Length: 257
Image (cartoon, rainbow, N blue to C red):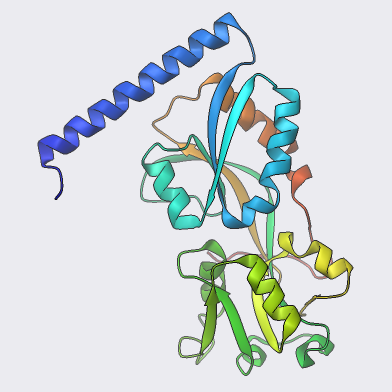
C-alpha cells in the first residue's frame, strides 16, 4: 500500500506543521533560558569513532542542550535526514537528491591496510594492479568507503570481476586483516591504535591515501534552531580536533568522487 497524491501532500503538510511548531517551541525555550535545546544527530558508521568525543566536548560547553546520537550506514543516515528523523548528519559526500546545507569540518583519509607480515607490506610504490592478486575485504555497497574504493579502482581491468568479501563492520574488517593474508580499504581514523601497536600497516599504494571530507549536513528546508546553530559553529571551529588520526606518511590525494 502507498499513499495517493493527496495523501503525500497531507503528509508533507503535517511534517511542515510539526517542524514549524518544534522550531517555535525551541525558539521560545531559547528566549526563556539561553543555551537550552534538543538536537538529534545521525552519524555514519565510521564517524562513531569520534562522534561521542565530539558531542561530549560540545555538551561541556553547552550543558543545556540535549543530544541524541544515532549511528547507521550511509543509506540509513541519509534516509533519516530525508524523513526529518534527525536534525544533522555527520558524514562524507552529502546527498544530492534533496536539498541540504553542508559544513566541512575536517579531512577524512582512506587507506589500504595489511598485516605487517603481508608480502605487500614490504613493498613501496604499489600500482593499483598489484592489489588484484590478493584477497580483499570491502565494506558493503552503499557505504561511502565502498563507493570511494570502486571509483579509485574503476580504471583497473578486472576489478569488477575481482572476488572479494563484504563485511559490514569496521571492527571485523580490522580483525580479519590482522589475522590473515587479506588486505582491506578502510578509514584511517579507525586504525590509529593498531598502527601504533604495529598490528597493521598502511600500504604504499600510488594515489593513496584518498582524501575525503567530513561534513555536518542539515536539510536546506529546515530553519536552524539555536541548538543547531550552536552545534554548527562548534563543528566549524573545533570539529577537526576530535578526528582521531591523520596519516602523514604519504601525501594526500584528492577524492575523485
